[in-house]
Image (tube, rainbow over all chains, first blue to last red; front, top):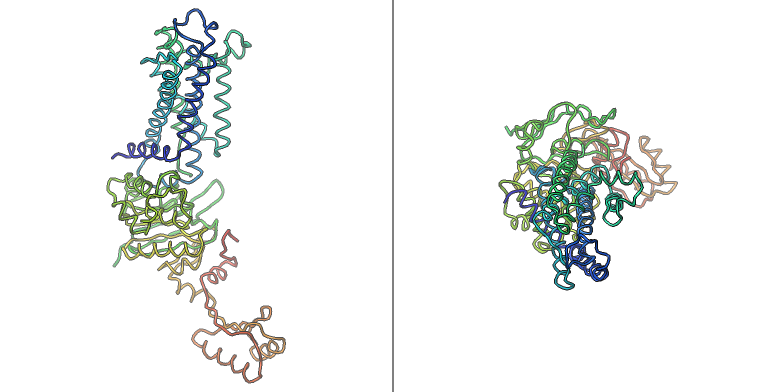
Length: 252
Length: 309
């Protein structure tokens, strides 16, 4: 078994040995989706005209909710795990073995992406089964979710390079995700924002993830969705590349 | 002649203007248990972490099993086993899973269950690492350090913070390594640990090697000799002993008589004769042997205590 597949296998086992993770990754998102679906699903009259027929208000908000979930989960998992392993000395031990930090990061990016998608899949499936939401997941939206997870995992790695304790890492990743949510047009229309916040919207990666998901899942505008996918993937490569380039588990 | 498996020459490590390791050289032969002894901040962990490829060196050279650590880091990593200071593994993996994880990092590795058995961890095989006591965690760490069947095992402060029983368990595990013919590099600030385990000790102070040799050799050279302690003497006894033995020292109610090397029995019998002849009283008499603690104290004027000076 290769070092990458070993880390991948045991990172899943480690995650599921801790039963609270099952609540965090599966039960909590499912309950959230069911609650929001129930509450917002009935608000059909607030649907924009261009939304696909048969959709309710929750279906319309779903791309934004998925984008926010990906932002928070990806960044927090990466930053939290790295800060924890560095603090506890796990990295010091790993650095004495033949596994390189690149191999470890490669394994973890796969694991964090699978876990995020699995978590979303369970929540969406439960909401579809119980309250009949219309997720409209397709190949572009799936690729956007993968690219988005990689992007925000990269952000989490970047944060963990500068922040050395878990509490601070949580505050920074969650705080940033919250700010991005406000300035990405997910819940508040961009046109109603002050001009300087509208500029922030243009540089927020969450804007493109959210818009891309909306284009692919709601409006069916494949051209826009592909453009957003390329932007998210490009930003992902940039952020992930910088995060990984700065990542070192040696303590020289 | 046994070959050297570790050769360190003129090693220097600097952090900015601060020199943590200052031009030290030493070599270690195959099968030795070699201890680096010194207080916190002496440069022990910095030196060992350079040898473990965890830190870069500023100057000098380190050769492990014929490989230069700067050029052949990967080859060195495959040949050594490491128990780092404040060792921790994956909290939410079991003992078996943790050992297997690290075993899979190497192209060739030992059978995990045989390591579990060697370190007497069978009853904890399926227990999560986070639920183990400090001593058991260290034993898991030693098991992990052996997964690649290394020729050299580095143990950095393996018993720090452990209770006496757990320390003994760790010592037993280290003795087993010696029996298997492994070379063990140990860092410690416990002089009893160095004395009990090591065949050769190197005393480090402020980044310099200040003495090197077998524990007995160091004690004979720098320990200051053995001391006869006459405990809890009353005032009259103290005065009589001070008059009769002019070279003695007084510490509280105790009288301390340095025993001359090769003539210690005579000094002891003289002291006992004085006590008997004058009807003097004391609580007890005993001979305190010099230790590595005394070696360190005599060489540096500092004490080798946990937490530094």
